[in-house]
Amino acid sequence: MASGEGRRHHHNLVPLAVLISRELRSEKMEKPSVRYGYAAQSRKGEDYFLMKTDCQRVPGNSSSTFSVFGIFDGHNGKAAAIFTREHLLNHVLGAIPRGLGQEEWLQALPRALVAGFVKTDKEFQSRGTGLCLFMLSFFGPFIYMNVASVGDSRCILDAQGGAVSILTVDHRLEENVEERERVTASGGEVGRLSIFGGAEIGPLRCWPGGLCLSRSIGDMDVGEFIVPIPYVKQVKLSNAGGRLIIASDGIWDALSSEMAAKSCRGLPGELAARQVVKEALRTRGLKDDTTCIVVDIIPPDNSVPPSPPPKKHNKLISLIFRKRSPDSSNKIAKKLSTLGIVEELFEEGSAMLAERLGNDLPVGQSTSGLFTCAVCQADLAPSEGISVHAGSIFSTSSKPWQGPFLCADCRNKKDAMEGKRPSGVRVV
Ligand SMILES: [Zn+2]
Image (cartoon, rainbow, N blue to C red; front, side, top):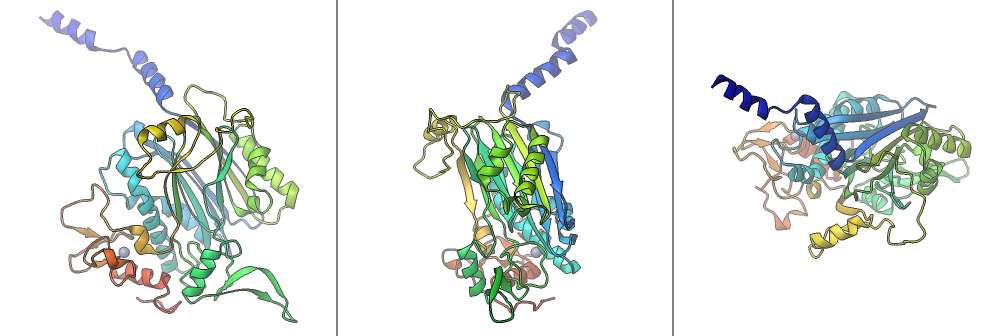
């Protein structure tokens, strides 16, 4: 009996080495891998960055690992850049409901990114100093990419096939008409610096404050219509992989996206990042903090970093963003993705919090009847929460008693960002 047990037991045991190699094999077969490097040249010491590849969607579950890369380009000091690097990721993750599956988690991310950015900005302001602009990228368990940005840092994608595209938008007033209109409508003034004699110089700025950007985290001395609400894009990359270049404006003032991508093709991450910085300095000199992160997403069973020379024979293998629309069946999407096409799952850049937090509770939200503030996650008594849609011009189709809800403090922040109370008047 005992020996029978033993035999059966023995039969069921799989040697550890076999397990490990099986694990490695399946990891290798199913998952692309991520390699990365960074380089920086400092002038003002205000650029900070984050590279974290061991985050887990489900704590303890190694198959739910994701990576985060961020550039935090401070202005007028480094305090906001440091604060944002320390807190933003936790605030974003804290805004995602617990217990979600992978797909629901990805769906909840865009809203969580908005909440996390606003919470970080709010917390930093209450501490009193500093300024910051910023950028963060998530790569889901596979090749799902979330990019969130305020300000003028940029993330580009160099996909297999040599097509380069920008995954962020530029929140410089000079470049962005929509943002100029929004700021003006909220009570800000947009103009250039005037020098003696009336001549105007430099880029468009927003007054009060004189900032060249329309969005940032932690700016105190500017109108509250300089909002921390990020542009968010979520894309699904074909399994051919690709390269991301995330960098502060020191790079992009010197190089176009194509120039940056071309300058480092074929080099592994660390060398590639150095090469991009070198190229920017060669072109323009060291005029600003210049920070660059290069992330290679390497297809399974391919040990060579993606370094695609543009292929002339097949113009189909160029990067086309395909928006997920009701008429695009999964079949079509699948076919296109095997051709090296990037599928755009989500894109939203509105500066209006009510639009960004949406109407419905995220899938899987607790149904216990407890409310939490959609921005700062503070617990709310049933009578305390104010619907994000209450009094909003976007509320026509929704009911003011429907969530998501905000605490009084976050509601004040929302009103200020929408120009509904005078800038600089702090409601305590
Ligand atoms: Zn709140």
